[in-house]
Amino acid sequence: MYTPIFTSARLAARQLIEADKNHLLSAIAQRLSLASDEIINANSLDIAGAKTIGTSDALIDRLKLGETRFKSILSSVADVIALPNPVSQVLEQWTHPKGMKIKKLTVPFGVIGVIYESRPNVTVDAAVLCIKAGSSVVLRGSANALNTNRAVVNAMRSGLQAAGCDPNAITLIDSPDRASVTAMLKARGYIDLL
Image (cartoon, rainbow, N blue to C red; front, side, top):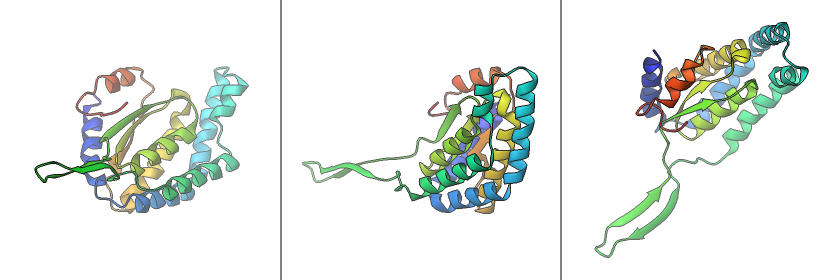
């Protein structure tokens, strides 16, 4: 059921190897900003749903995205853009006695899966950190933030597409079904780090 999602993320990861990650992240930030009203409206639906089922005020506060928190999300994307490129950093190098030059380099993981609860800002934080590191990401947030996560991921995917990148580099498991967690845990050969 989830294999096509994982396969698409794997194919998109290949495109990220040579991509200008900061260009992609700037496009993501721009699309998030343009979609702010839609994202905050989706968040209102999640908050109303959480109140209906008697969710505690503390958990509702974790879920809530207001204008201040949304600005903080955009600021965190700018912070990630400012980070040095973590890919192709030389960790060690030496010359073998037979003259062969050897380097140990940092490389992308490929596909990273992230399972998390409530906080919609984690959706953005996880995605942009994975993109900066040259890896695709498969996100599985909690059911109580599904509307918000859909709106956030749609905006980020739109940014990737506008920047000429495969939008499947950021994918949301768009289901509250707990079987998706098991599917991610068993996705050897598709998800490289969970």
